Length: 75
Image 1: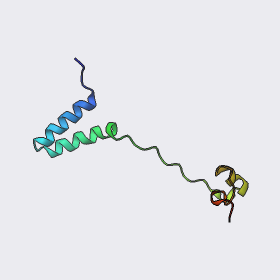
Image 2: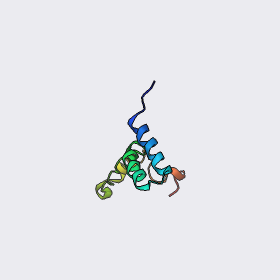
Image 3: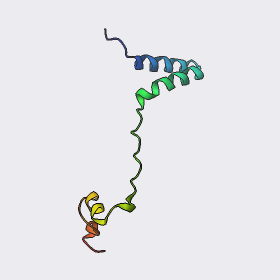
Image 4: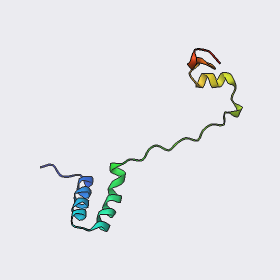
């Protein structure tokens, strides 16, 4: 017999409490289970200050295509 994981137990009891009308109990268990079901997205990195970056360096960051590369070179 495979033992249930802690998450499985939390979800099973949460569903039972919801079905039985214990909304507060179900919400409490939902909060406990949420990090396991919905992992957090990685924190966004702040945008760099591009004012001090040269055009050549920007071109390198952009894949080396240079200005107008995406539209065939027309600027």
